[in-house]
Length: 84
Image (cartoon, rainbow, N blue to C red; front, side, top):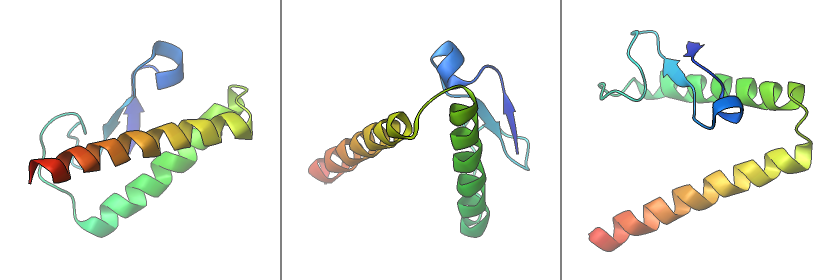
């Protein structure tokens, strides 16, 4: 897995993730098998954490970022369930 482009904290946008198939995660691609996605998420999260720490972010700031992501996902899930 490779990251292309600037990091999200440098340019304000998430880096494009290129999977083993070479398809950007932002493009519509067939779902990867679940174990590969789980492994990719672990690798991505470790990479993001490492990069944030190397760029001077404190653990509290990283927790705040993670909390914001969880909040966004929770809102998205609520929106999906209201449509059903």
